[in-house]
Length: 352
Image 1 (tube, rainbow, N blue to C red):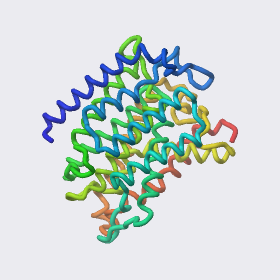
Image 2 (image 1 turned 30 degrees about the vertical axis):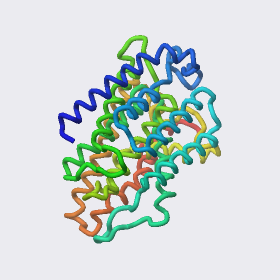
Image 3 (image 1 turned 60 degrees about the horizontal axis):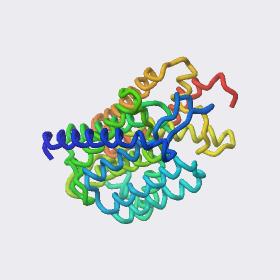
Image 4 (image 1 turned 90 degrees about the vertical axis):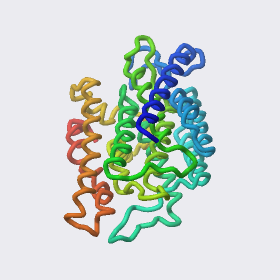
């Protein structure tokens, strides 16, 4: 795919997604797809929960995904819309996510095959590949959902990951994949265009047309992120993107979810329970404005990506045998540093 074609595809996706958002906005309240403010949700008035429907429809219409990716996206859209309307029990929603994810994994054989290389030997997952992939995808879907508590945050983290993925593939010399029955470059441009259009509406740039992702949206972009990251790192037609770099592209939402779940479990609560202890809430408690928090967390996500890239690039000069796994090994320790150096300081005044 040429740069011109990618820009054309992205622009078409942007226009279509914006048009769908305009068309659906007046219908959202009629069908009960709105989010109302309460003690935990502090936005003003009812906001349409149609971001996911618009992004999903746009991606399906323009990217023309493979049969199993199409079925999985439709399944998550239905599951998310039902959750937005009925507020489903977390266990029911989790089982639905697992089932739909398994359909994609076993249907398209889309699995994380290894942890990288050590001393020129591939560290294959073998029989654990499919279960590990299900956990990874469902985990990322819920990580995006947990990040969806501030205007622009979930969509912004998604755009940062997608733009860095394609930028790093070009910079490091990795080809765009052609397997799994979907045009990878076109699909990537479509996703970026659709999420960008959603961001404009979500940030309130168009008066009277503010929208939220809704659970359908966080599930859809979580699945799309998973699809792109796994496809890039398992390309069979040439050199694939390094597996050890993949988690760094989504480092902030992943480590935030892990540490948040840990804190809730320590308090003998469900990891899926709702509260106001997310990082963006803690920063709000410290007096930061929403736009400041968005900039801080966006900058943090970008900084983490480039820390991972620096580790990957410098490792051959320091410890050549660790080149394929060093970034991944360091990432494992990241949640501990994140919790001890940041979260504990932000919550020091609170009761455990």
